[in-house]
Length: 112
Image 1: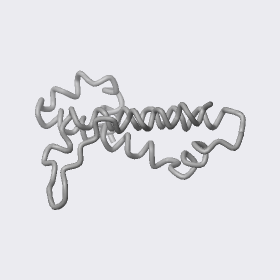
Image 2: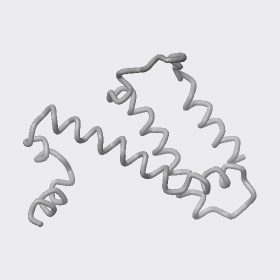
Image 3: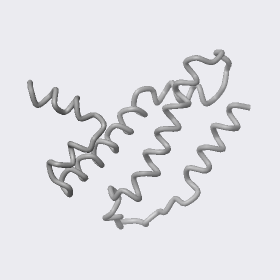
């Protein structure tokens, strides 16, 4: 049953997938409206990874897939999230850091 849920999620993730074509390029591939769906996919993959660590170890296909992906899932989520924060910082200026919830972490690194 869990495999069906995982593969249904994978199917829903690619419903509106657009393929540009040979020798063509999406120039807005890192825009926020394009990366939010990618971040959402990686959030769900992280949730599945955490679930697989605490669940009963049965021979599910998605456990094999998630074991292969491992920490790559987290690194891609952090890449897209960090890039979004960097772009917001460029647009909104240094005062943007005062609105972030992890302001204390930023202050910690500035004091080093």
